[in-house]
Length: 272
Image 1 (cartoon, rainbow, N blue to C red):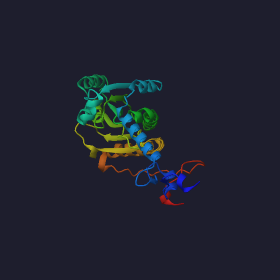
Image 2: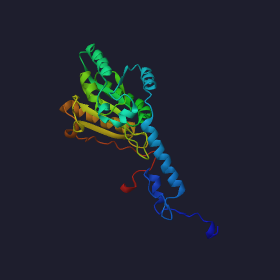
Image 3: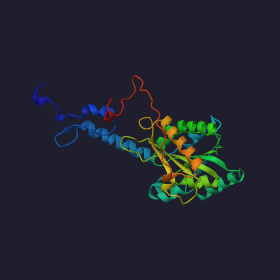
Image 4: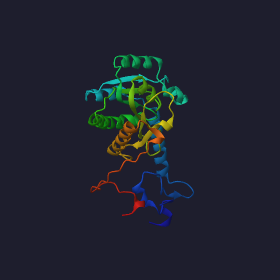
């Protein structure tokens, strides 16, 4: 091919490193700009992130899945009446609506003994993450709770919910511990990242220092098995020490797994 027919885009010398990460590195350049393909890919990822934020939470489909496993659910609403209000007023997503709080109080009155563990699922900033990953994570958490002999509250599904809404739910249910599975703020390479937030002795008014977070749970991030492993360690230690948050460090021993043929490459920074 003659020089005058060559593409104006130039490949980046680090191109081979792109196979090791979803980060936007080694995109190449065309003059002082990005190549057209890289620019279009960026716009597509941005659109995916925006869609994830505004996607409606299909709590009915999730409740139906859990019912197939004989898992009771309660569907509640935060104080944010709609998505627009939820995005404009983060504080409203941290508390239940009056009607939902009354509904939960009625349920708790019929179960005055309380529960060892309450599980909450909220759309957060990515209902896509919740729809894709919460069923598998809930199944693993249920199995862990059964093995430990912990009593479980119904799975509480919250529309327009933020992390702190789990504190009110846990307190009303008289739950010793609460875990909320919530869609995290989408990134340009991760529109479906699920977060797990764990609190011991939940009550209204706690801040983030009282919680432990396990982030980026998804197929391209932290695996379900690893997230469950870390969460079980935190719950066991919290049960023993009666605390959570900054005073409870994640010192779980990470199991070493042999790489299967055809699996994704490891961290190139570690060598070997």
